Structures are given as C-alpha cells and as structure tokens.
Amino acid sequence: MDAQDRENLKELIERFFEAGQAESCGEDFRKAEQILREYPAPEPDDMLIANIKADIAMRLGSRRATRLRRLLCDAAGVAAAIVILATVSMELFVASNRQRGGSVYTASIIPTAVWESDDIAADDADLAVFTAEIEQIEHEVLTLQAGEEAGESESTLTELEMELAELNSDFWKG
Amino acid sequence: MAQGDDLARIIIGCKNGDSRCFSQVVDMYASRCYGYFYRLTGNGDVSDELLSELFVKLVEKIGSYKGGSFESWLFKIASNLFHDHLRGKQRRKRLIEVQQEQIESEIAEPKRSDDEQVDKLQMRLKRLDPDTRELIMLRFYSQLSFKEIARVRSEPIGTTLAKTHRGLKKLRQLMEG
Image 1 (cartoon, rainbow over the protein chains, first blue to last red):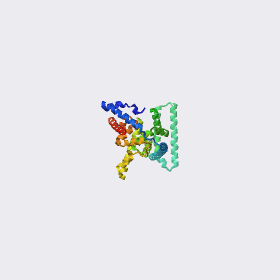
Image 2: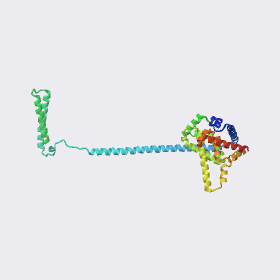
Image 3: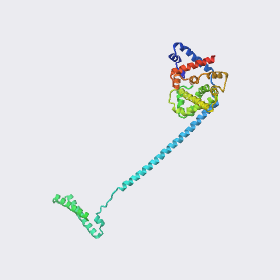
Image 4: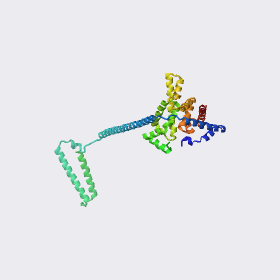
C-alpha cells in the first residue's frame, strides 16, 4: 500500500475547501487521475535498463577498488607514522641517556698522598702496619663479642673506638 | 511492488554496495521515474539520459538516505535532476540565442510518439505552466501523499493541494474539450 492509498484525500480536501467546493474538487481529482491512467507514458527500453544496471555494477566495482586503495594508503600512512614516531622516540631516548651519562661524577677512594707517592717501600711498610693494627683491633672486637675478656667492656670499647679513629686519620693523611 | 520490510532490506543491501539490490531498485522504480521524466520533457532521449543519471545519483547518494519515505527521497533527486536539465537548457539557450519557442517545443514536444493517445496527453500537458505540470507528474508517478509532496517541494500542504487541483481541473477540461 503506497502513501496515496493511506492518505484520506476526502478528509484532506474537506480541510482546505469549503463544503460546497469539496465534492466537485474530489471529482476533479478522480477524473483527471483517470485520464492520466488512460494515457500511460512509454516504458523505458529494456536495453536502457540493462545499461543502467551494468553501469551501476561497474561503478560499485570501481568504488570498491578505490576504497581498497584508500584503505591500503591509510594503512601505509599509519605504518609510516609509527616508524617515524619510533625513530624519533629512539633518537630522543639515546640523546637523553647521553646527556645523563655526562653528568656522572667519579672520584678515587685511594688517598691522594698514597696514589701520588712514588716511595713504594715506605708505602708498603705503612700498609703492613695499618693491616696489623686492623687485624689486632678486629681480634679485640671479636674477643669482646665473645665475652672472653672480663674487664670493663665499656672503657675497652671506647679505647678501641679511639684507636680506630686515630688509625683512620693516619691512613687518610697518608 | 516490494513491501516495507522488503524495501528496507533492499536499501540496506544498496548501502552495502550490493549490485543485485540496486538492480531490484531499478526494476521497481525505473518505469515510474521514466514516466515522470517523459511527461515533463516529452523527449525519449532526454528521458533516457535523465533516468540513467538518476540511478547514478542513487548509487552516489544512497549513503545519505536516512530513512523515511524512499519514494519521497528518490523523487526529490529526480525533481532536482529535471530542474538541472531545465537550467542547462536555459544556459544553452542564452549561449546560442535560439528562439524561445524552439526551445519550449523541444522541452514539451514529444519526439517519440508511441501512439496517438500519448501525443494527445503530451500536447495538452504543455499548455499547463511548468510548475503545475511538474506537480501533477510528481503526484501521479511518485504516488506520494500530498503531505510528502509538500515536504519535497518545501511548501504548505494547502498550497500543494490547491495547485494540484487547479492543474488537474485544467487538464481535465483540456482533455475533454
């Protein structure tokens, strides 16, 4: 059922025409449309219809190909963008690391006096003395920890700490 | 004629680029659209051209169809094509400065007379003003309601109804006279 069938023409005419006019108006519509039906327009040629269908199929085919090409171009564009982004990110990362590496400060833990000294024999003797003193202190600390010495442990510890401080000072002085 | 659900399915197929669905639309509407163009131009070759253009436009514009009356949408495109054709004629007329009557006869004079009855109606139709002629043909071939025709023409429904009545009454008098 088309829109005209659903439309109530009589009601519509009565809405816009006076009661007297409405009837003749309706009659004009009916008669004129009857005339139009009696004089049908020619039908389109079968060849024309076939050509139209072929043209549509061709257009749809080329449109599909265009869409595929566009899709490939888009994908290539995205891939290129990702590669460029990755390259730029890598460059930035490397540059940033290089910059951070330049700001690292280093220093020797060996005292300058010992490092710069050319008197190897004297340095060796000093090292031997320091080593012996460290070993002795280590031994005393172990004895204290074991509780073998019955003396005043507090004063002994203080003495040891003082010895350690002195030794440390001597060592760094070279 | 396809029912609402069938038509909706066909249109979805068209939107998906299915050529078979487009072929179905061509089968459903080619006759009515051709009749519309033929009665307005009175020329078989021009009607062939306009019908082909209409379906090309259909393929191009089907994505913009957002529902509602498909006939209304299709005949709006057909009407625009006809007006473009008239404007083209007018431009050509100005360019080559041929006589007004010659152009008018080219628009309204039937070149392909299939039988005597077709010629008679066509001859009477050209006595109507172009706007009324188009309105009557739109009503007859699109099978749209007056409400839909008024929407297509962007005018109040009362105006559409009154113009159609005047035109049909005159046509009736011309044919019976």
